Image 1 (cartoon, rainbow, N blue to C red):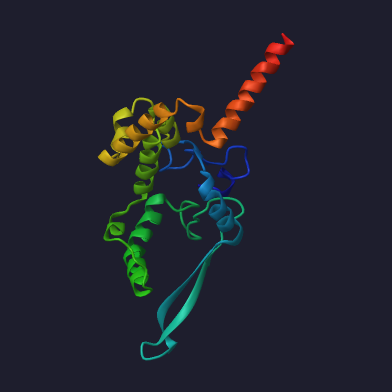
Image 2: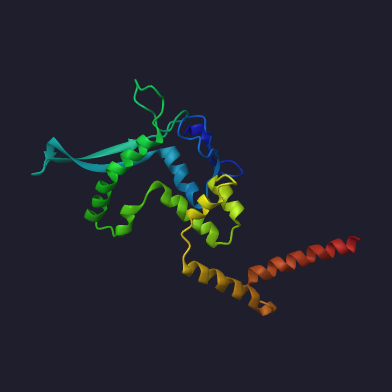
Length: 216
């Protein structure tokens, strides 16, 4: 992925998966960046990502000879996000190389959270990169989004219907909530049952239609 493929200031914030490089040709297309992710992504692009870690050092303090080291990753202004070493054949890291590094560091990060007193579920150890993909597809399905729309979001080909459904983690609770919403919407047959926002929207539509009729 290249820095210029990230466009958060467009009318529709998106990341472009170009398919120009090996490893990205499976599902090219545009990925919509959801509103709740815009703030943190803008912050990382502007200020980078900084972390503090404790490691052993001969000049460290205490019995364990440890020092606190600050690491900062600055997102390049142009070109590949994850650049390879200077003499590497390709100018970028393959996504498998990035993932292998994440896998190696994940157990240490998990232990760090426990030392800091953070309550993290055991299920967190089972998370994988595609876990987030499955989560958002499940959310879209749970909200009643048509399958064609959620497939477009996930960049799944029209013929991969079964593959797309395989990402769903819908439960009986999701079915119950959907049925309850349907039942609740049918009960709102009186104006008194409507929320103020819905009433104002209805009034606006009525006034607009009346203006059209008067002009005729």
